[in-house]
Amino acid sequence: MALLIDGIGELTTNDDELGRVADAAVVVEGERIAWVGPASRAPAADERFDAAGRAALPGWVDSHVHPVFAGDRSAEFEARMAGQAYAAGGIATTVDATRAASDAELAATLDRLADEALAGGTTALEAKTGYGLTIDDEVRSARVARGRAEAVTFLGAHLVPEGWDADAYVEHVAGPMLDAVAPLVDAIDVFCERGAFDEAQSRRVLEAGAAKGLALRVHGNQLGPGPGVRLAVELGARSVDHVAFLDDEEVAALAGSWAAGIGTVATVLPACDLSTRMPLAPARRLLDAGAVVAIATNCNPGTSYTTSMAFCVATAVLQMGLTVEEAVRAATLGGAIALGRDGEDADGRPPLGRIRPGARADLQLLEAPSAAHLAYRPGVPLVGAVWRRGERVR
Ligand SMILES: N=CN[C@@H](CCC(=O)O)C(=O)O
Ligand SMILES: [Zn+2]
Image (cartoon, rainbow, N blue to C red; front, side):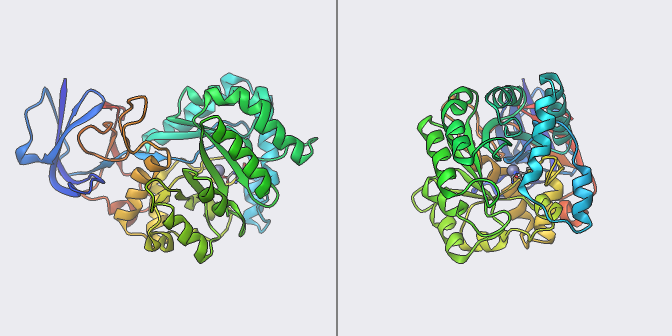
């Protein structure tokens, strides 16, 4: 069964050869894109959807999400907006609530957030553990995440839980906790920051994860300068996320990491920067230097309680100095690269983040003639239709 979507006024493909196509059409067969080009040359199909001049682009790939949690931290947010600084310790509030919640409650929250994200055009979502911080609670967080997320990341090293010595906890995370969680996850992450884990502790956790064959991610340089970016590049992490405080050498190291092929994506989290009243990450500087940038929501109850990639894209354009095309690319293909899903993977899963033959048929149609409206009309819900794996889901 082939579906022809034609009458697309402006199609963003993220494909270097196809580029942006005006008056475009896309043919979808099963879960993949079968054909892309000018509508006038589109092949026949079994079904037809008329986009009526609207803009289409790949579904958002949200590569940094903490959706497995319980509880609410709106009081902490309100206090912050009244002048209190954000501190890593707030994570403990969510850890208590998460441990007390049932698996069904955690799954219901994840479903609610993933549905909300999908309605906003997000067709692939990463999910981190990290609010359990015991072997049992991290294992069940990973199980819940697997039910819904595209990729699952183990974040046992999110915070040293109460009652633990920091180094002893690091050994626990890198040892028995990792042994239990590794079969359920794709990647390992660490919060490398003052108040969380230092360089040596972060290195220990990441090297243990790498030895299990997991991809590496780092929360780095969020609240101030620190070793996170350097460590991520040195260890060949897929991404280092937050990157708000960067010196020129760190920017150059991120850009240089791509010289040998696969490098470390700099993932910026604009909604988090705003929600914590921190400086916006220097996405413009990163792109100018030649780094690969992703934009993600960092949806979590502490620092960034939004699933809206459109909000993040609008902020990246209006306040971080990206062009619309750069921001859209970072929020789609950038996320796919950060997840290691920009090409066909070892399990034969189709690539994400591009609209071209062979890619997974994840598309969003805007109630607007061009993607520029994402920033031109900030805050307006523009998503008119969404296809995921070739299926209309909105
Ligand atoms: N920075 C560390 N972890 C989360 C915050 C989690 C929380 O405050 O609950 C983040 O990415 O911002
Ligand atoms: Zn995070």
